[in-house]
Every structure is written in C-alpha cells, then in structure tokens.
Image 1 (cartoon, rainbow, N blue to C red):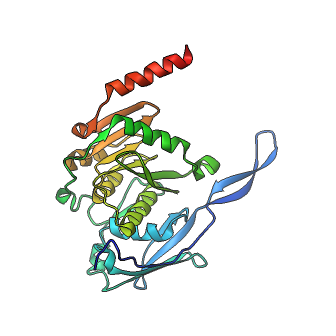
Image 2 (cartoon, rainbow, N blue to C red):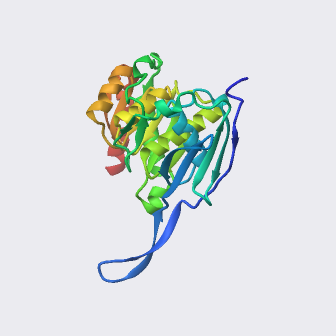
Image 3 (cartoon, one colour):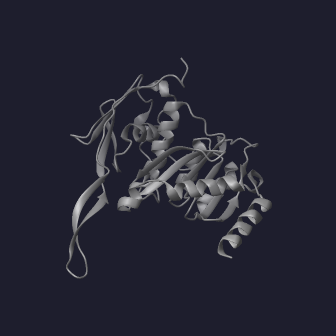
Length: 289
C-alpha cells in the first residue's frame, strides 16, 4: 500500500481557539479580552492511556499523529487505523492495526524537556539521532529567508488576537507557506505539523521550518526526525540545540526579524545574496530620502 495515499480514519473535531473574559485595568475600567483556549487532550492508544497533552485544540488529530510519530512509537502511517477526538470528554482514541510493540518498556523512561508547559519525550532524548541523515545538497537563499520572515509577520493568527501562544510553520524552499499551526506550546505545534506532513505525504528534504519559540534540543531533534534541513526562529537557541544541529548537519537561523538573522550552524547550506541586500538598502534609502 502506498503510504502517501493511505490515510487513517480521522474525526474532524473543532473547538474554539479563544475564550472571552472580563479584564479590569489599573483605573478600574472593565473591558472584554480574548485569551487563548487551553484544554487537556488525553491520548488513548488501543484503550491504553498514554499521555495528556495541554493544547489549544486547533488541529487535535494531526497533533496526536505527529506526537506518536515524533515519539518514535509509530513508524508507518499504515499502522494507524483511526484517530477519533471527542471534546466532550477531552480525549482522543487511537486504534492501531497491530498494537505498539513493547509500549510499556518504550514509555517507561521519560525526559521532561524545556517545552512550554514542560513537554516530555519518551526514551533517551538522543536515541536514533546518529542515524539521521539530512539531504547534503539542500540550499536556502537569503531572499527566501526574508520572504519567510515577512510572511510570518503578516500572517493572521491567534497570537495577534489573544497572545500567549507559539506558532510554527512549514515552508517550501522558495518561501511558499504550506502549513501554519499555533498552540500553547511549541512542541505541540511542531507535532501537529509533523502529523499533517505524514498525512499528506510531504517530505521534509527541501522544506524550511519556522518557529516563534526557542530552538531547543527537542525542537532540533523533531525537525531532524521530520527530515527538515533548515530551522528558523525569531528567538534564539540553546547549547544542546546547537550541538544537535551541528551533529545532524542542520542549518539553524536564530533572531530572524526584519532583515536580521544569525546563522549558527550549517553555513554551507545558506546562499548569501549581497547584491540583493544592497538593493534592499538602496530602496530603503530612496524611501526615506
């Protein structure tokens, strides 16, 4: 069976992404305020409770699938028969074709990560990293980096309406936005995109991943597991995130705002375009002349 064509049975659960509350300012004035939703989603795999994810709830089926994939609990999309979300009980039921071999042993060890709300990874954090090989010929131009940053800046989002969420996005190497997901934790947003990529049969080999959050070891490892050679962030990175990126040959670009970025690893992948940058500066000077 062609994995790209196979899709498990999925619910289409919807939930409000924001919640309206009353706020009182420093002068005692009342006003309505929208804040992000946050709800528990307990994952049951073949009727066995696995974990509870705190989530915005925007893409619960993709989140569940991506979580199982990035936790290395499911290797093939064909292993999943169905994913059914029921918000009336804040739960998602996953039915597999043949069960998950050794699930007790594989979920016994848990690493609490730096993810917002404390994410967790089953097994050793660095398990299988040595086996990851990213495409050596992947390249990204400086002008596409700027196009991605500008696209994110103008993207309609829950963050602009209510704040307090992280956003992640997947782009083509020409700067086309493919997926954009927000959640209360960046680890959830990256898992949801991993799930969408798997469902749609999208390869990460020529893709660029953007996150508003830090490039921690967890984020870099998940990006590498998804086969993505480029990770961009408007924030920074950590020592271990940087170490893992160098280990797998990934390009990390941090502090991506406006025309500024810091390339921290994978220099050979980024194509600098000084003439393009000079043209932008000349246009800026003409505008303010």
